[in-house]
Length: 288
Image 1: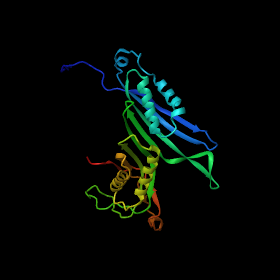
Image 2: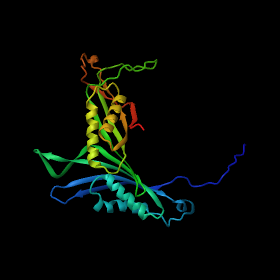
Image 3: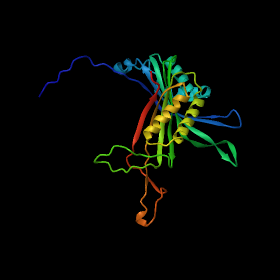
Image 4: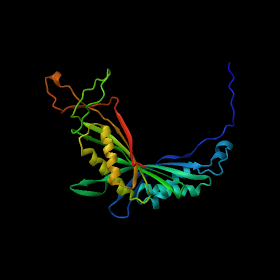
């Protein structure tokens, strides 16, 4: 048996701790017409936690239960605008409250609600879940922040004006080329701001609208080309955004064979395929 020799001390490496999946709902009841905010919050703290790990000394640690309570308590007076602004408030609090906390990261997923419309009128206190989720990650030390916002679970589809042709054929290729196919995907986008002086809610809505508009405005020779076009459109229209990452899974819709029933299928009947799917991802960013 070969003897294994080790050298050097064993030390604690990078570490963090926090509270995850804090589910917060706030109802704004200032007027007869209510509003609602629903957000899932993940808190992570970074700093010098060596004593707790190595010596079992918890003296300087904030309990994760305290972090959960803080999210709910601060939401009462400080969740009044965007989740990004609320994230910065939480970071300032945790850096000040934790003796050994040097910085924090707050990840948030906001579920959006639209008012239910009854007989052409928006209801004052009844809502239906909206398409897409507003995501945000705020990191910082209490004075400087890095803020990323995004949209998740945004399912889109166009019935034509898309194709897949001219690709590499080799011995394992079986897919036929087409100049007219359904393009369907579930868009996940995350963009990094180059400033904190932002109307976060207004910008988020405008970016989402630009993503949807760009998805529709061109013939798509590939999901790759559509990804780049979307990213380019966002950066050209929003100077406060430095770069954007997009993920476009290809939700295949396959023409169903009706010929065995003596019927023609004129690009009308499709099978929404749950089999393995293509995944196209990438950054579009400003050059240095």
